[in-house]
Structures are given as structure tokens and as C-alpha cells.
Amino acid sequence: GSGTPCCAAAAQGRDWRAALDGCRVSRAVDGASVDAADLVLPDTGCVAAAFLTHFGDLDCWEMARPLVDDLDALAAAGVQVVAIGIGSVDAAKAFAKFANFPEELLYADPDARCYAAMRFAPGLGGAKQDEVARRLALNGYAKLLLMCLGVGSPGTLAHVATGYFGSARRDAVLVAGSNVDVPFVRGAMRVTLGERGNLRPFELATVRLVHMAKILSNWQQLAPVKEGDDLDLLVQRGGAVVVKDGVVTFKHDDRGLLGFCPVKRFVAKAMRAQSAGDGDETLDEAVGVLHEAAATRRAFEADLRGAITTLERSKDAKRSVVGDNLTGKWQLIYT
Image 1 (tube, one colour):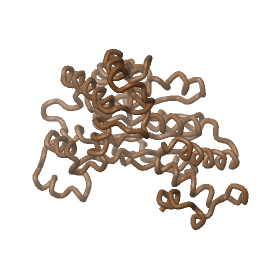
Image 2 (cartoon, one colour):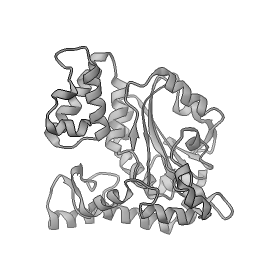
Image 3 (cartoon, rainbow, N blue to C red):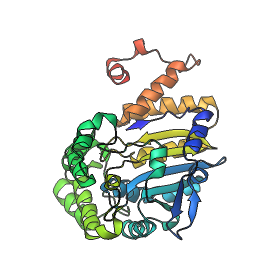
Image 4 (spheres, rainbow, N blue to C red):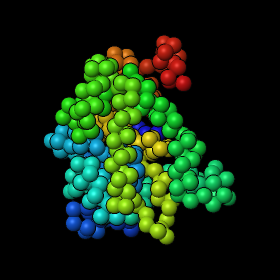
């Protein structure tokens, strides 16, 4: 996915507000219609807005369920969390129940107007490069199947592989007390694979299987489309936005299936926006990103690029960095 650096200009916030003008979403808790621009881009305060895919989509579940674990910390920091999904109010209510997600934070966008306004990827067949899909007149289900195979869905196969093979660079998802936890599976993995602290083989794939079983058994309640509706809503992608005082400080665009913004990154960006102060704090954050990456070997590439760029532009001689002087490993990532 892509991420807008945390030094976005104020004009960008106004541009997105204009784009969302006229878009409305419905509160899951009572069905009331709400102006999307006022909800996502208020003039004051910090908002972390997750634009989920449709309520019966695996991406929606895989992002929203672990986000529940961070809601208390975000609220304590003064960050307002907003989650918008594609589908009806009834579908939103069903999702909230099955995924254990707070109804009061959830909103429904039945025709994905907000997603078009925010320029999130429409999925296979929606962009100019997908001319073949349009000429074949594939319906939403056929497009979804092709995207599952990686067609018109960058990064999907790699994400699928991570689910089966695990990753030393990702945290475990089956954690005691987590909203995603499946205790008996976690116990079995502890016995067979031990406590590794990182994502174990088949761990994420098992969680996805649990989600898919719940989705398929409740498809009629969760599906964004009924007979005769726009089936392209099945492949519409989402994204994530962090806003501080009306300014977009971070924007992630899902590129394909399973390309949603990692919850850890989303929460960190929201916390950073809420606590942001002067330029020195921005430099401190950039240095922190590099130190954490060096210590843990875990980092988001876009954040590394942003950190290096921030330090290159810095006038602080003690903390500036010149690309030509980077070591081989950092140079590889930098370029």
C-alpha cells in the first residue's frame, strides 16, 4: 500500500473535504445519516478513520478485529476512531456482532460513494489498465476470483504465502486476550511450534479460515449486494486515513486483496498525529524509526523512506543524513 508522509500540507485536508462533499454514511447503532466530511475531517481533534472493505470481505475482518485491541489506548490518547464499511446498516450491525466490534464506532456506506471520493482502488476492472476485464464483462464474483489469484491485485499472493509460512518480521496474531485469539488453536501451536514471539507458520492462515467460516455461514447478512445490485462492490478496496485538526497527516490506499493498512502502523500514525508538536519531534520520530528498524529488523518500507527523507531535509547538522553516506543496507532500502 501507499502512505502519505506525516508532513502533509493543510491544503490536502481541504481537498479531501471537498471530495467528500455530499457523501453521507449511516451510523450502525441507530441508522442515522451522517455527513462523511464532518465525520472524517473535523476542524479540530484527531481522527483515525478506517475505510474497511465490504462487511463480508476477509480484509474487513482482518483489519477491524485486531483494531479492537487498541481502541482503549486510542481513546485514552484522545483519538476518535471511525470505521466505515461497504454495505447496509443491517450488514454493519451483523458485522459488529460477529466480529465483536463496537457498533457506536461503525458506519455503513451502501454504495461506496466515500470510497470513490477518497480515490481508493476500485478493484479489478475499475482502472484503465484492466481493459481486458471490462471487455469480458466479468461480474464481481469473477473479478474477485481473479484477484484471489493475484490478477489485478498487487501483493496478494505474497500476503497469502505469509499466512501459511509465517514471518520473523511480523508479530504473532494469536495472543491471549486479543479479540482475534482462538485459545485452543493458540494452545496447539504452542505445543507444536513453541512460543516464538513472531508470526508462526499457519497461524495467520488459521485466523483467516476462522473468519471465512463465519463470513460464509452468515453471507446473506453480511453481503454488500443483493440480486440486481452493483456486484463491483465485492472488489472495491478501502484504505486508512489519519486526520489532525482537519489536515490529512497519513493516508494508506489498499492496492489489492489483503493490502489493508497494518493495524500496528495505523495506530502508531494516529498516536503520532495526536501528540505531534514542533519540528524537533518530527526529527525525533524519524530517528526513532531508523533505530527501531535496526534493532528489530521490522519496519514498513514507506516509513523508512519517509524517515530518511526527513533527515535529509533537516537543517540540524547532528541529525541530518546524506544519501551518499548511507551504508549498503540502508542504501538498498533508500533507493
